[in-house]
Length: 230
Image 1: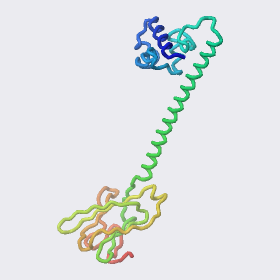
Image 2 (image 1 turned 135 degrees about the horizontal axis):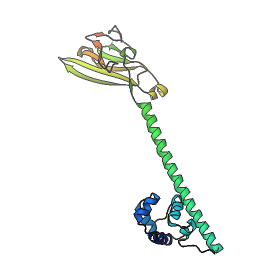
Image 3 (image 1 turned 180 degrees about the vertical axis):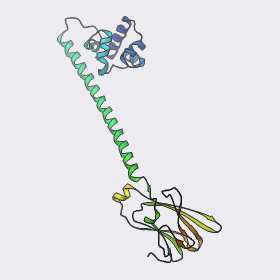
Image 4 (image 1 turned 90 degrees about the vertical axis):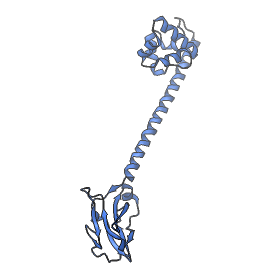
């Protein structure tokens, strides 16, 4: 099989039918650049398009492979050569299709892994602080005791009128629920004398919930703020 010979043959047949490269490409559903590559011997038609190309040019697939018209009397050697060329093209086509399938499967698998990991590690915030956080005193410090269901937390603070305002939120993850070694967490917030308010967010109604105010806890937590957890 000679790509240049086949390309010249395609070019001759196209011109004999008064077709431009663009017209032929439109009939076959390929780009005109593909036609140009075939005709210059820089490429070869895919096996999946050979039948349509042969039909449009009024020749047989065997003649396209041979690069010339086949006479009524064809030698056995020519038949063997054409058969071998067909077999080689078919093998190339199958190899390309396998690579495409492998590439598609790899990308699909990668997408599934990313989606699964995102689902496993995405934070799911608790709405009700009474179930997962207590505010207690530990010596002269104020601490938050987080339930074992809590995978992680966010803490922010601000100061107003010499009082520290602390904001805390807690979340869980599917990964933590399934695989983590669960245990309570004790988080130091600040000196008790410095803290005016501790608020939990977000809540179901999207408003902060005050869980500690001027030495008293509310909305869950230990009612006795002098209690030492340890």
